[in-house]
Image (tube, rainbow, N blue to C red):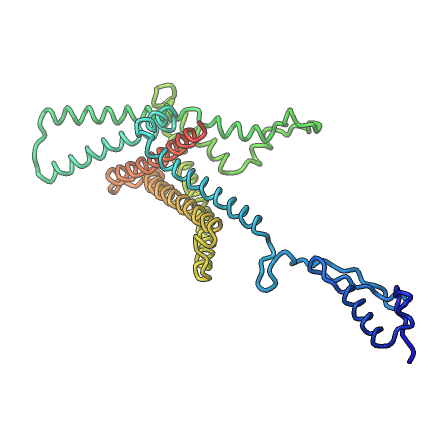
Length: 376
């Protein structure tokens, strides 16, 4: 029987019988298929027509075979640590924010509020219409009871009426030259930036700039000039007839600007409600799929904070809308010269607008103090 010659075989094996040849073959293949590092090293026949293949290292060799996670335990621990650090920092910021709002005194907020002309205007308006409401209520009760006023009551009413007129004139003086802000906005559109590297373009005529200004800015400018003319008339610097005409024109500007602000307020609230609906839908979908604050803490906290921020914005937008409605009712009596229940309606709407405007300005100054405390 012919013997089979294997490559790399010892010379003594060529003349061995078939049994010994089979044993040597088994020993050869056993040594060739010894495992090393969980992979097989296969020696191919060099006379074979098939080229040898390069062994590849398994991607999941370091993980489990069934149901194993591809990421290592170190990466998972680092990610969890990062999420925990972010959650702790967010909780600390929220706690600091709440503590800062509690620590800030009301006197400090009023101090900051009264340092601005707008804050003094709102405060004087609140005092003015509070006095008017007291006079209106006291007069109504006295007329129902048919009781005569005493001498001290007449003196008190005269002092209150004088104080009301003084607060009204003081508020007019506080808003003098408010037309400078819209004027600077208009002139800034016509001027060129001196720090711009480009060549300065040709300056447009001033009339062209005014005609192409946005209507709200132009309306604010005209309203400010008319208010100043009316104030100068009350101070005795301009004739009474001119002051009355300027005051009536200022009322028309106030009426139109209030309508414009109401439209802008409605559009802004529509955007806020749309964003709230998206966040609420996302939170509802996460709750239905089983995602909770423990399973997905970062996304859930972001959505919760965004929802709280949108709810706060929506609240103050509604406060602004109520104030604008009160202003619209008040100025409508002056524009359309309505006389029926003019005094009580204007007193109530003026007091409500003053309270809402002061509350909004108070919250703005308190938020600014909280931010200043955080950065210091």
